[in-house]
Length: 100
Image (cartoon, rainbow, N blue to C red; front, side, top):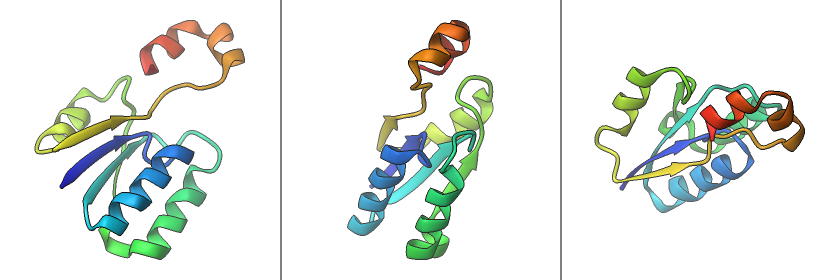
């Protein structure tokens, strides 16, 4: 099974990816790597799964071509990219709306 995980390097996304790789699924991780910890999650996945880890470094809000390519051929899409902090949503509601 080929799955696409937006926000694939976040806390939940990286754990979902780990489970998918353990099952033998192909997982494509779509992430802009803007959150603290994303690079640590990527390093962990690379240590465990090496070249099986596929990452598209792009933003769901503004890189439509990358998203179109990523979705093509996916059997399932888990949309976990999003802005999660309430304080940030108040300070910049437009960005919050676009990401979520």
